[in-house]
Image (tube, rainbow, N blue to C red; front, side, top):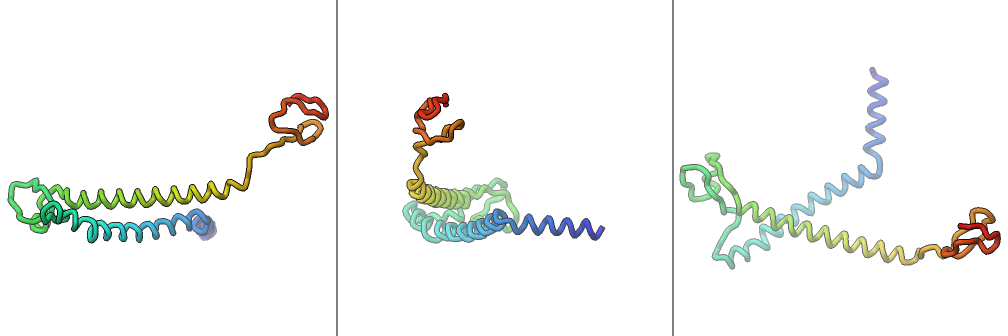
Length: 151
């Protein structure tokens, strides 16, 4: 029993300490922090001017009451547990998602460009080796010039 527990713990340790798992954990932590920054940007910087342009609209208070009792604010409806469609909060989340997706797109685009720059130094091979006589020949050749073997 103790030996199987030790084996299990060793197996878990090997899994948890793999490079990919640690990289994934770091990515999740950084992503969570990035998500908070984007949500703050949307809530505190982007939506207030949009709300001002639309006539003093506060997106966090926009809702549709699904119940029969009237409520003046979303806070009142939520306090009593009334069913509501909180479309203002959905708009905020949608804008946050679009900004996050755009930033991820820009990052991947930038990383791809860096990888392409690194690949420029390694050119495609121009020669190949004859499998019979091991002579280096042009990659376009169909016969070896040294032994006349068909390639």
